[in-house]
Amino acid sequence: MKLLILDTSSKAASAALWEDGVLRGEAYQNTGHTHSATSLPMAEQLLAGCGWSLSEVDGFAVTAGPGSFTGLRIGLASVKGMAFALDKPCVPLSTLEGLAYNLSGWPGLICPVMDARVGQVYTALFRWDGGAMHRLMEDAAIPAEELLTALAAYGEPVTLVGDGALLSAERFAGRLPGLAVAPEHLRNQRAGAMAPLAARLFAEGQTVPAGDLVPRYLRLPQAERELKLKQQKGE
Image (cartoon, rainbow, N blue to C red; front, side, top):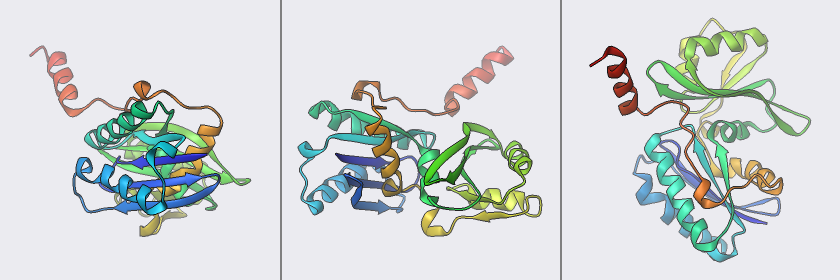
């Protein structure tokens, strides 16, 4: 089984190639350049470097959200185009679950956290146990204080991972014993870390045709939020 995995859900972008339980290659950039200019060339160079042609790929995986609204659309559109052309299945990935896989084998609670702005974070909760990642909380967009309350209720050491990890650690400082932040090289989304998750979902048949790939924002875009607020005020 050969898979191409793509992530454009945040400032960093990455691509990976996975074959039969082995990570064959990974490309990663955290330059801030637009993903529309970097993601496909990155995937193309990765394929060439590994000696693969695109037609050899059995399926595609892509982060569907949450994350940057523009970034998600770019990644989904890129994978849709390739999958449509080849008539290959796709695996939509939770960005948060993919982040948790950065800490495979890690002790304690694993809490992916991304800055959702407007005082909220995108978050979920996982635990690595018995050689597998176990979900403890569904993906959500919630106030940071609500996350603090949820984590405190477990009374266990917790490691934050994701682009909101440092900010959340500052907010929670002194109020959550056993709090830690993942090291910098494990903190951002990486397609290579997500590859085992993508392979498992693909093997389980949790795939969709390219036309069914849709973003999972978890909250309304800013323009829609502002319109809804105006409508509530009767403007």
